[in-house]
Length: 371
Image 1 (cartoon, helix red, strand yellow):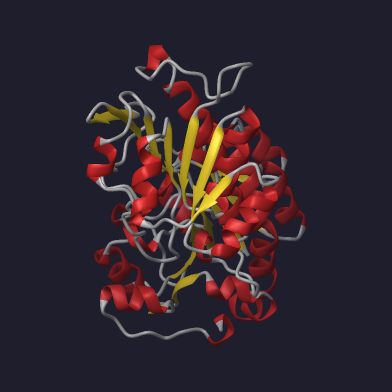
Image 2 (tube, helix red, strand yellow):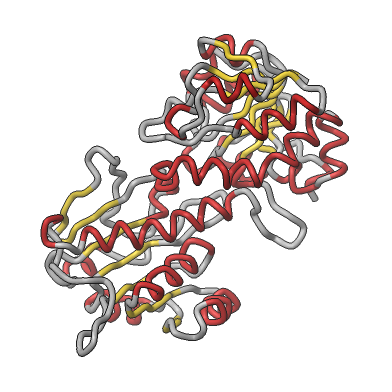
């Protein structure tokens, strides 16, 4: 199969679809891999590395898409990419249905393309194996960013996240106990902070308690509980994610007004709309804004700022599935790995995911292997 890795156009994106080692693996399996010029540059993977791995460098986006039966990326496609997508082509990348535009969906359907969203690949036991490592990175990064923002030179409260003899650590409140929240809690506790995690799912809270050696306080996010906790927070981290839908707003503007001056809010769920009412997206170039004296930092692609680590993590989670598609073709790959079928948003021009069909008002043709 002809496979391509295209250069990311999304602002702040520093990840790349495959490492050179993964390219070598696909080439050794008999496939042709084309890599757009400088696609791996921001992650520290230079063109020479891909050439040495057996890949072929192409010099524009049109050729990167034009040569490929299977095109691999990281960030979601946008409407300007429609001109490059070939009829019948397979594209794998993060998709984030909550942010996808109807015009893009219609254009991809017209081209009879197949779109597989990394974040929607789901195993039989309900895990999201490609999304999980990115969530781990985002959770840990949220804490380290918050630690810097609490420092005086960043406009913060001038406090250390960690505890010292006779001085308690900062209060870190985390809304959401999934993969992001759990890893944020572990990181914050490791630095010596005092941590409280909210989630509606008691099993998730049990998992937080287990992985954090019961050092984190866990609670259900009844509005009174959240309102009280937010008042005492030095750091508030939003980590609520609903598969295929926008998360509910659990922290209101009125609650933010009660926070300590120069405390910090980081809403990791910003790419799906956020779970904090005062959330709006920011960038690495302009990362913060203030609401009622509270510092907000809501960068949608946190793992991209550790592009090399994130690229290794992403490649490790997708390479088996990419090779399965390349070796067997789509129908047989779906039979062999139902998690792939569950990741399909559009299959040969037909909407294959119920939530997307309902969002754009088009008929559903669900893949039997996705059930």
